[in-house]
Image 1 (cartoon, one colour):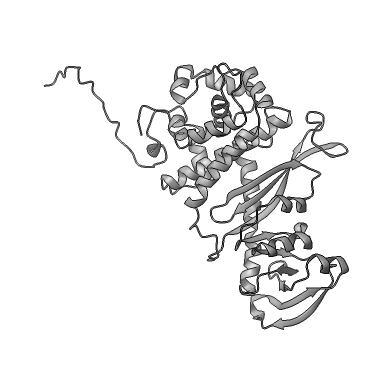
Image 2: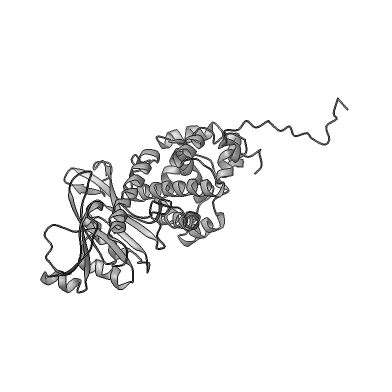
Length: 388
């Protein structure tokens, strides 16, 4: 890469600009736009994510101080707080949602061979949601409780590399189980969920799609044991059974056999009961799959700590969704850079380095390296050398 470029412009070169223009064209994002395009909006918001800006005024001040560098960083429009606020409020958030999906499709093959603790041929997804609290007086459209506002971030996480494959942003009142209606089930894949997603009609949809699920059972579900399998008690597994449901509605919703596994957790000494439609994997692997679901919780914790998705630059629903989707795009972009540059650094370390060096004009690989590089001297061929 050109050493004369800023680190920010080198980082943005990893983005597929043609696909971005197609996303903008799909929703007429630049309709009647004179100067501040959707690309300028994306760059401004990505800069804010990478440098942890607190407000629109903060973004404006930091970018204007480097006015002479902005053109070479990709900006073509004038950076203004009011212009950026209007863009976040008016321009369709689906532009950035679709572009984030483009980046996800680039990142997933890069992490396909990453190990998450279990060696399985199938793709393993963890499904869960997290609540982002909002002030009801500022965000009246996000009613959650009587005096509380919130939105939910429903995420389907590919456990190979912790890459989010599908994200749904809904009001806080939407129940988790309803998201199963929006999933495109991948045949052969394994979906790991907590018991909040235990709806037998929806689980049977996964079964009919030739996919597998692993979930925790509720205490009050009625079943009949058909037969038991041998288990190794030293693993903490107390039973491995083939069952059928006995409740009138549950049996109607899921008429096929299920596998029930009971585990005594050695750490908490609690009995955990799992349900799955996978009869081939060992019982220990099923319990380990559910334990690996914790990665989606770590993903939520990570993005809340290191991305700007808890404090927002705008109060409209469109502005909030735009900011969240651009934050997800930045997360996936950093993951792509990590793989394509073969960096042996964590995403946290990469973000910290970027946050203090975006205006630096050094090669990107040098910024992430601990080695001491000598400054290369470039001479103009028209300049005479006094020492010849």
